[in-house]
Image (cartoon, rainbow, N blue to C red; front, side, top):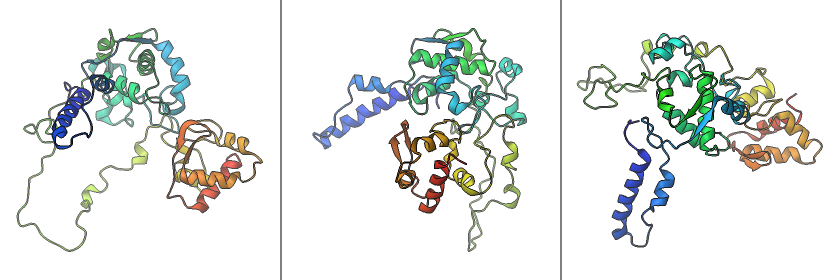
Length: 328
């Protein structure tokens, strides 16, 4: 993303241009956006912190909010759990001093958020817009500062008594481990810049053969290595301790365990809670099979149950019977 473009304002300006252009050709259709409507969309925060609202939040306040609204998906210490990959880890005190994460070069661990991100505005803006996952944009400004302060404390970037605010966030930026990781020295930034590949163009006397010709060459097919061996060894990474056959494996293959666990609430309810709620209710198996395949919402809070149209009815019935048994 360009460092100095206010994208929301730019989009709003384009909306005005399009509306003005469309008015003569399509009279009575649409209208220009009002200043208030534009302002409602103009909530982005630039890397130079333009657009950042006034506010503050401490690490201690952030820990309370994190435990209540964030840990279920990201782990108590940002180490990950069954839902998302790690936010914290892979950075050192030397990285904080240098502003460049060494593990990105050495490949010692799988990449975490604090290893990759180079601007605090990115984290602040994303938390503000999209978190928590089940209630985006519900955090007040001060809570966003507090959550970000706690996250940075987990990464040993800020001390435990730090109060993050719009007045000192630029100082915190200077302690971000990968703050010097952004580069513009490549052809994706400037078409006249250095290309990111060095292949010689060959568009002459190309051989034409029948059959599929889009496969990777033999020397490149294994270039990524064994991805399973590259995963971080601390903290679960989209894994669950289940058997390799039967209903647990069926649940894993259909991503049920990304949002549910057997004995604790994640994004959705625990299977044992579902079993307890519907125990002994006539016709519940058929109703849950229908809900599993077509989706629904409201029974367990505001987060909807997505539809699974590709799930065969017989597999849905096996899963529902397993869930109603409490995942036993």
